[in-house]
Length: 176
Ligand SMILES: NC(=O)c1ccc[n+]([C@@H]2O[C@H](COP(=O)([O-])OP(=O)(O)OC[C@H]3O[C@@H](n4cnc5c(N)ncnc54)[C@H](OP(=O)(O)O)[C@@H]3O)[C@@H](O)[C@H]2O)c1
Image 1 (cartoon, protein in one colour):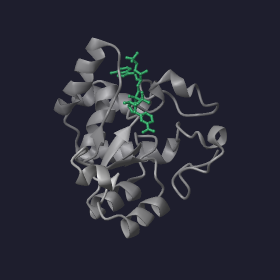
Image 2 (tube, rainbow, N blue to C red; image 1 turned 45 degrees about the vertical axis):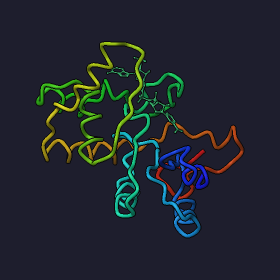
Image 3 (cartoon, rainbow, N blue to C red; image 1 turned 135 degrees about the vertical axis):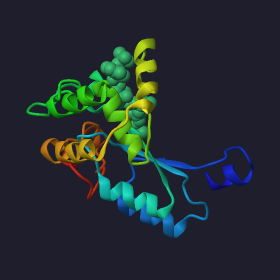
Image 4 (cartoon, helix red, strand yellow; image 1 turned 120 degrees about the vertical axis):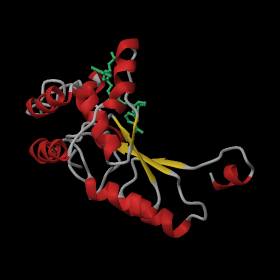
């Protein structure tokens, strides 16, 4: 990957789904620091210390699945949290700020200086998600979302079992 940067074929190196040990190993061995690390982040999986650590290292963080369990690919996790769109606390915040629940989740992601990459195949939702930039969350909202994260801590994307590779070691909700 570093050779691709040196030869001008790519501008930056990005990583995804690394645990802290893997990021540290790169830090020690790589000549070119990764520009960005993409991992699962949403109000139900906040990983705030991990985000802060990357930001201190100068590695940008991209939040994938920023709408939590919205993608049917992940199925319904038995005993898992309600959909973000039905979540009582998120709905309260959405109503008081004149936003939708999706916009609250995305605005929260941007407020913590991560980039958010929601996926939708519906034009009106893509516009709605884009407009989350106008959802102006206040401190009290961020505090409530922090509490939501503690209450419902859930990682949705964990293919460790199917791949027979332990992923996310030492990170929040890394159970298989
Ligand atoms: N690096 C990795 O390992 C990794 C893993 C997972 C995902 N990703 C990436 O992350 C991005 C998003 O991931 P994701 O699809 O898992 O999660 P997501 O964006 O949080 O959720 C997508 C789901 O939410 C629905 N949705 C989108 N906007 C909505 C809105 N405003 N209101 C209601 N429903 C809405 C979409 O339905 P419709 O499409 O029907 O509108 C879709 O089912 C993708 O680019 C994906 O490739 C990366």
